[in-house]
Image (cartoon, rainbow, N blue to C red; front, side, top):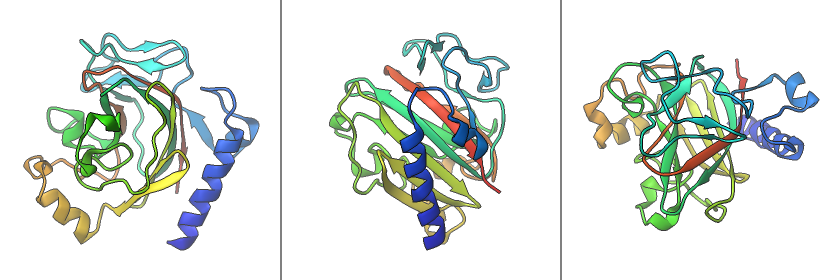
Length: 226
């Protein structure tokens, strides 16, 4: 576990150092196996939940953003099992959103199957289990420091054979094991117990949530882990 954490930290520092122009890859990132999920210009590679194309209202002008009033969640066309996902997010005052992973089309919403990396303006006053950077409603973030509202935060989500790490602005703020007794006990004691598909699949789509508040994502890039 220490080796994995150290490797993740080194990779994080390397990516942060290389990150210059949003929505692009450096030669080093490309050589390391990173690929863009968003090119800054289009929603290519994205679709809706149970629909072939992205839902209405999502714009791609340097930032991937929903229309808070009409858009539904979008998700990657591809599915991912073990991966290192890097992205930036910017939230509106009192805003709420999230990034789900291992999303399947079982259930009626993306969050009924996919665990959620929380995106939030913490001044909204939500309890610790629902603050930015944590696993929504299950694991509170520790040591998380968010940028002021209106500025982009750097996030990282690493999923490696059930072991998951959440990073926020260079700090590892949460770690858990999807296959552990602790994780399963927390799910059983939460609202997610009502949804059998939740965290049940070892692979799935990555979804961006529209929670009814203005939010923007950029520099979404992923590296598949073996």
